[in-house]
Image (cartoon, rainbow, N blue to C red; front, side, top):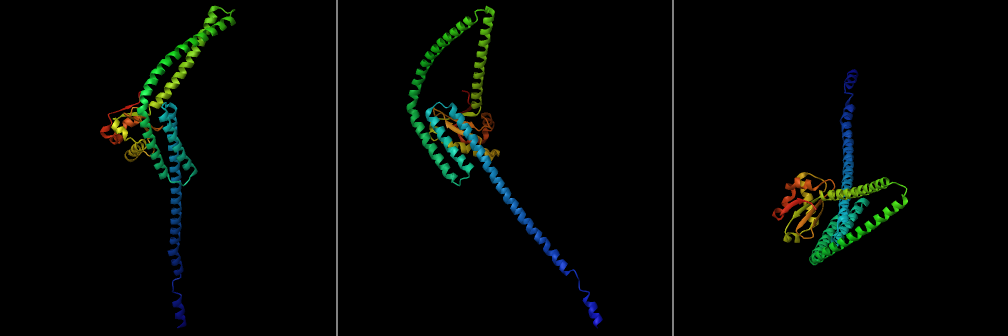
Length: 297
């Protein structure tokens, strides 16, 4: 009997504990994998947010460059003041993004809209009284310009005469042919420099015009014009319908005559691009747009 009992006890499976380990080990690995995946997802979210901030900062910097260019060519004092104020606002937003201050950007946006609306109202009031003065000033400036041109021509003639006299006195020993060659060389050099400066100015103006699109509207439509809201509407259209994740329009301003709206693009876009993609944004103006063309002035 004892022998049978002993033999029976040895038939119990010896791998019960091993089976238990086989059931628990995969669960431990699954938990570790889930934690690692969660950590990686958080890191990706953090990197994505960081990248979004960089892109936002880059867009604001690009807008500031466009505003600076507009300031450089703007001659009207009221419009110049508006551009300066817009520059300060975007610089404030840029500073907050760069320093990561946790201020309410919605509050800043409301402040921008309020300031721009007040600025536009003030401009419209001042423009009505200013047009007559501008026309008179243009006539006066034309007269002054003619007078100044005559004086400058006389002064230049006198200077050239003095230079020629000095050259003649310093080169008495030189032959007539040598003196003529020196004068020709100096004149050619001066003309070359003037032509280069003129070409550079024309190139800068052309680059600036390439980014401007003129949309003619009636005065009644212009009275309800809001540059900030219009700019955002067009950029939203490109985002939703063309999947363009960066702003296309930098500024939207009204002309002095209040009969046209001027759209200025960001550095990566142009007026030709706006014309090619006109079907995306032209419904914003509906039938109010009488004519759409590039800046030719």
